[in-house]
Length: 297
Image (cartoon, rainbow, N blue to C red; front, side, top):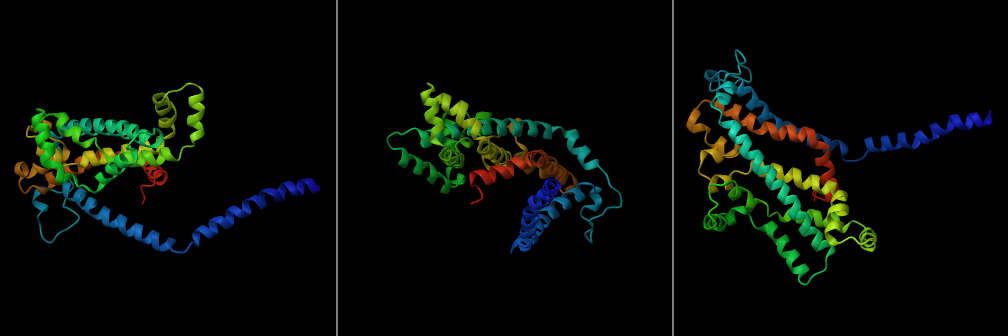
């Protein structure tokens, strides 16, 4: 009977620390304030988004009615139908998806290769070159528009997909994130691989990159979002309507719809829809990538 009593009391004893830990987490100082601030920030972000949805579902005549109202006399999807009937947004989707996917893939590949070299391969001038790449974080992209455009024009790439892709794959932050992650991998793994006869490329591709999935997810997601939302460079380097991306296309809607705010808001919602879906699908990877790679500052 003593043995049975011990077995019965053991789980209770094991559960006690968990209960205490949960209580301590609930009573952690500043937790309530942080939660309140997050709720306020979420509301501040959601209110404009909700207003855009409400406006896109209104008849055109009621979008400029006074006093301003969240509700309409009737809900209608005419704005979305008008936008989709024009067909331009499907081309903008294709262009944005193509550019964003290619830029993301090349950024992950080249950034991780450069980070592997800085982290694991000793060579002359490694530290000055690394600091030079890190210094690229303080140079705004807008300051490079003129020389980059001249370079693309000299190469004959203006009004092509490559003109939008190539300047965006140089990402100092990707190199820094991957290098920080690679620096945390034990050197014993590399030494064991070298003993087995593996070369630098095999170590990078078959050992380092599978281990760097959190860093890869973080870099890929943020690169995709930034590229998808990039307006100024595609706007500068392309003039053909067939090459317009979502942000560039949205900037031209006023010339087609004038003051038809329902159509403008419908286009904005459709343009942001892929990013919202991507966030809902990969939100766990986003959080893990931020926490595991030190992007939270």
